[in-house]
Every structure is written in C-alpha cells, then in structure tokens.
Image 1 (cartoon, one colour):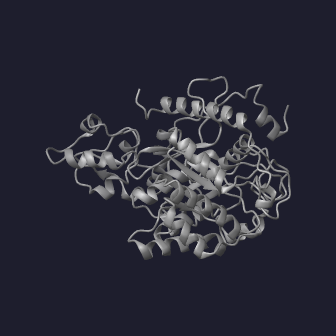
Image 2 (image 1 turned 180 degrees about the vertical axis):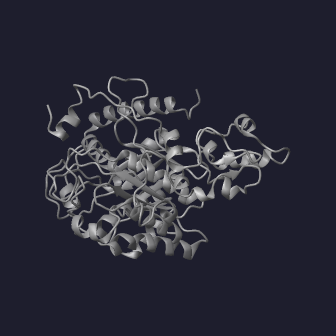
Image 3 (image 1 turned 90 degrees about the horizontal axis):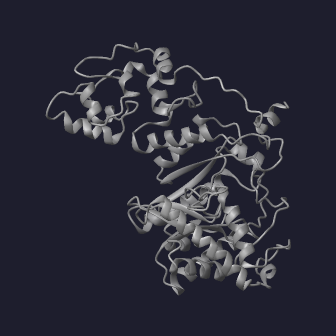
Length: 453
C-alpha cells in the first residue's frame, strides 16, 4: 500500500484529528481581545482553538471550489476522517495534496438567503486571528498532516477589513515562516484592488464565488452582491497577474445549482464565457443544500440535485478538454441536460447526422466526440490503425469501450446490426427497461416530502 493510497490518506487524516482534539483540549487558548479585534461584531464567539476549529472547518465545507472534504462514515474506524477540515486538491502534475480548509471567521454582515453564515442565522460563531491561523497551519505542516491551506472567510466589518485579515495571514506564512507551500485564498468581492494585488503576489491560487448565475437571482437572494461586484476581483486578479507574467494566476469559482430557476443552458453558457475570457481555470458546481427557510428557495425537505451537479461537471469537462461549445450541448430549445444520459451521448443522439463515424479514417477531433471514446481511446485508435485497418474485435482488444460507441461507429464500413441508427432505438438500448422500485417502510424522507405515512 503506497503512501498516496486512499486508505493510507484516511489513516493519516484520522490520526491528524485525534491529535488535534487532544492538543487543543489541552491548551484551551483564550483570545480575550477577540471582539475588539473583529470590531463591530458583538455576538458571542467561540473562545478556544478547539471550538474555533470545529466551527470554522465545518462552516467551510459548503465551499466546494477546492474539491472534497473527507468523509465521516458511521461505525468505521480505519480510514475514518473528520467531516470537514481537510480537503484534497490536485497540483498541476496531477498529484493529490491535502489542505487545511477553514474559514477565518463565519461571522458575516451579508444577508445571502442561501448561506448558512448569513447575518441573521442563530448559529455558533467563531474567528481566528491571523497569528492563530498561521501558527496552526505551520504546526500541522511540520507534522506532515497537510501540504497547504485553503482560506476563506465571512465578511466581517467590511470587505477591505476582511481581505486585510486574510492578507495578514498570508504575510505571516510567507515572510515570517518562509512557507513556500500551496495557499488558496478566497478573494472578497468589493475589496480594493491594492489588496487583491498583494494577495495575488503571495497566493498559489485565488477564487471568488459567483454563487448565483444571474443578476436577477443575485438581486433577489444576495442583496449585498451584484454581478459587477462578484466579477471585479476575478478581473482584477487576471489583469494584475497578466501584467507581471505571461499567464494569469490560476483562478476558480463556485456556482450553486438548484437554488434558483436558471437552466443548465444558463449555467454552461456562463462557464463557457468565463473560460473564453481567461478568467478561470475551473468552475465548481455545488448542488444546493437547503438549510434556510425562504419562500424564494427550495423547501428544506428538498434533496440536493446531485445527479444534475454530476452532469454539469461532465459537460464542463467537454467544454474544457473536448472542444465542445455550450450551445452544442444545450440550447434555447433544449435548456436542460438529460440526467439519464451523459452529455456527450445526449449531444450525439440529437445530432445523428454526424454519425456513424468510420473509425479507420476519422481525425482525432471527431473520434473524441464519439460517446464512450475519450482522448486516451482516440490516441490508441490513431496509433493502431497505422499498421492495419481496425474492426470491432480489435477495438475491444485495444481496451476501447464499445458499450456506447458501438451505436455510433462503423469499422471497415460495417455498422452493428442489432440496433438501427435512430434516437429512440439507441436510447432504449442504452438505458434498458426502467426498473420499478418497491418503496421501503423506512423511506421516511420521501414520505415526509409526499405527506404520506
């Protein structure tokens, strides 16, 4: 079992949190000047580092723009990690790195209807000082628990004040400790460009969450934000980094899926525009988890649209690596992705005029558009057909998946004979007959939604 295996990482994370709990319970630091430090916020706050870490790492789990946040499997011991606090991100060379994922504070002056940390919510509040957070980060790093930091924050007192706190943390880590590891910092919409410039100079990656895909939804649910305000830090960071180097600093954002009525077409068109303008390296999609009661939001009994989120990630991959445009995948007439089919198959069924594709003559950019054939499969085909013409059996021996591709290709001019090249026939062949599910007596959640006993 290698050091990078999921099991080994789980063991390390479990040890990390066991150690953290013991260490923080032992020392119980008190920050008596906390309320003064975060001027203007008077609600009771957590006083010990243990309380702060528990609250602020849990609050950070709703921000998905740096991948997963571990697991909390009940009854398990081996590989079990805390529900939040450690997330895994990936470096440019594909290496998985562990990050301490935490908020500077979950106190916030904003009143975003969808956010757990909104000002009017009666939840436990906490805040780190820049010194505390920098010390904890270095302490964990020296013990090889983490390799970097993901740092975000609620808006306390003002945008500039909050951005200044994050910058102070960065400066302690970079200048005082000489920390050269990965640091992802959330830019605060509305802060001054001078602060963004200093953060961009010190951070490894920055992001700013757009959250809602339209100005109309922002006006309804996030009255403290506007489209211009949330886009401003991304544009400023891009321009600043381009002025100093030939490439912009890696940036990402998060879009909430299912909280507002915007369609997949609206979301993907926005993502495509952000990629084309070199504003972002990655868009993260977050299925909305209902946590606040609000007439403009889905009921708190509504399940998060996880399958829709998954389809958006698949479509986003096609935008970034397969040369698709958002308007090819969804359009004004078909504004939603098909949750039963992956986006490439969904596109192919609506454009059968491009199929079947002859596998022995098609160029790479056409091969990668065949459902079931990715970049790796296309390269195998291009390499193998230099020596001889390929048939279906040879494709299988090459490891090319024919489960979906078989309905969209010909080999030596031969098309498979079982299913005609028609949308309804291929869809039926791919999905098969729908299975009827017997409801469980313990399916309490669906019962509550439907009002049935």
